[in-house]
Length: 213
Image 1: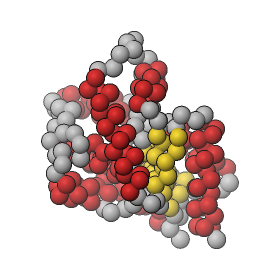
Image 2: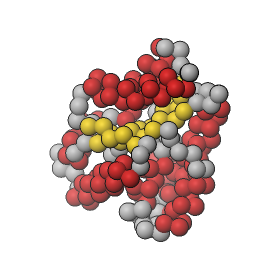
Image 3: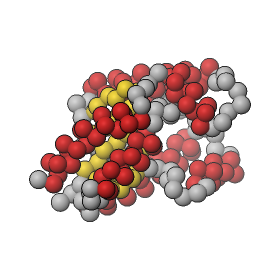
Image 4: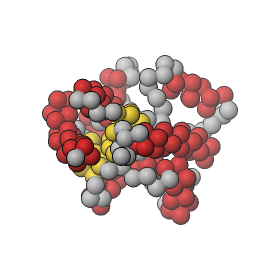
């Protein structure tokens, strides 16, 4: 029997990684096999720094097509790993899926509003694999940026206006996607970590019970 995939989406600072860790721990504790899916794996020390060093070494620009293809390659690998885990009957917990691709590239960068090209690139990387449920962890941009500042131990309290505008646009598009997709669940990410976990768990536990029955 194949497993199911649950994706957590949201702007940086919304708490996706923390919630996935808690969900993985809880599912494992009740003997349900889990696979945590992420394009850039945190458990491998130095992964992120290696990626950014590669981009600098080859002169990749932030909003370039080259950078987009690099990240789509990582997402393609993410999708392949998730497919294997699903075949093994595992619950896949995805820290972002293809929604983040659309949120950014449909509104920013060289492929902005080029829907035909974006659809092809999306299918190449994710092969039409759609999560059973996507949880959107939604919170105000100001709170997200403050969390990011604390996480990265920034010495300044002021973010560039461009970054703030990108966050606001991304949040708006995420909410629009959630409102138009019946398999999306919007979660108030200003709640405490335990409250968030319980709210997400209510939905996942129902899906997991249907898988086991």
